[in-house]
Image 1 (cartoon, rainbow, N blue to C red):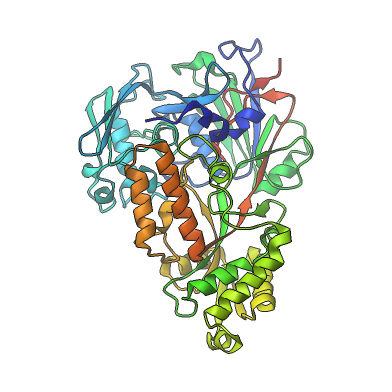
Image 2: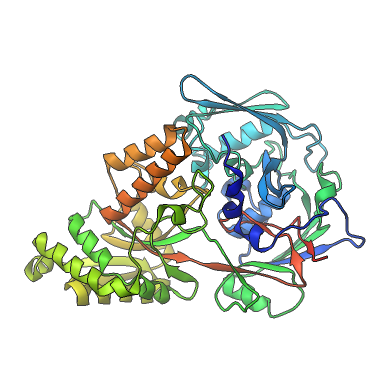
Length: 524
C-alpha cells in the first residue's frame, strides 16, 4: 500500500540536492537558529484554509500530522511515524481499504493535553464540510463517504475514533500515496474543536508583519532529533522581494526564489502548469481539429519566455517532479505529449494547416466564427499577445484580447463566461490525479467543461487497480486523451529556485513548494 523506496529521490528532490548527513540525534553545543527567507506574507494559518506555499510551510512546523516526511537511516526521505506510532492496513472484500492508526500517548497540544483520534476526526470532517469552504477539501476525495460529506453529511465520511488512541479511515479504493501525501499534508493536520492550539515541533514565539519566530517545543516527543532550536521566518511580498532580501547576509535558506538566481541557486520542482482553456460549451470553438491546430502552432518556448524567466516550455500537463505509482518521475516515465523541439516547429505548423483544411476551416470559415475572445490576468499581457500573433500569422485566426483583474477572471471561469482563458493548474497532491481529477465530468473545477466518458473511465480504472504499472498506464492514457482533445492546452511549467547560505544542509521539500527546516544544520 506504499510507494517503493525509490520514490524518495523524486518525491523530495531537494533532499538529493541538499542531503541530511549523519548525527541527526546530536544537539548543537550552541542553540541553532535557522533563518529562512520566504516569498509570501502570512499570519499563522488555519490548516484547512492554507493556500500558499508559505502558509503550508508554517503549518508543517507548528502542527504534527499522523505521518511526517523525515530522513531515514540511509539519508533518503520517507513517511515516518509522527502522531501515529503504528499503522495497519486491511483490504476489504468490497474493494475498500481500512487504515487503522494507533496514536502515540506522548503527542501533546501546546497546553499539555494529549492529541486524540477525535481531533483528527473533527479536523478531517471539518475540512470537507462545505460550510468550511476549504480550498483543500478534495485532498480527502479517496475516503469513503467523501461525496456525501461534501453535501453536508459529514458523519458519512469514513473517519472514526473507536477510542482516544485509535483512528480508523476507510478508503473507497486503493490509494498508494495516502500515507506519504495525504497523511503528511498541511491541510489534514489535527485541529482542536475547542481551541486554536498547535501540536507540532515548534511554537510561535513572536510575530510581526514581516517576520515569524518559532521556538522548538521542549515537550515535543521527537525533540532530540530537531536540529534547529529556533526558526526565524522572514516573510517577503513575492518571490522577487525574497530574492532582493537575499542580498543581505543574515539568512540561511531561501526556497521558492524567482529568476535572477546566482550560481549558488538550485532548481526546485514546483507544482504548477500554465494552461489555455477552451470552453467546450462556448459556441465559437467546438471542433477538436481546430483545438489541435491551435495547439500545434503555439511556440511554447516563446510562450514560456513571454511569461518570464521562471517558466519553461511544457511538454505535458503533469509537471516535472510529480511521482508516478512506481516512484518514478511521471513526466519522464510517461514521455512528452507535446512536441517542443524547436527544429520541428515549422513542420507542426504545416500539420496544423492541413488539419484545418481537412476540417473545412478555410479563410471564410474562420471569419464566420465571429469575435473569438481570450481572457487573462493583466500580468499575462505578453503571453496573450504572443498567442494572438501566432494564431493570426500561422492559421489566419483572429482573436480579441480581454485583460482582466485576477478576481474578475476567477469569477468568469467559475461562471463559465468565457470562450478561451489563460490560467494555471496546481496539483493538490504529489500524484498525477491531483492534476487529472479536475477534468472529470461534473467536477466543480472543470472550467473547460470537458465531458469524456473514455477519460472518466480511465481515471476510474486507475482508482480500482492494485497494480502499480497498470495504474500508471491508465493515468498516462488519461493525460494523453486530455491533451489531444485540446480543451486544456499546457503552455509552460513554472520554475522556482532555492539557495542556502553559510554552508547549511538538511533542507527537506515535498516536491510541491512546501519545506521543512527542522533538520537543517551547518556542514560538519
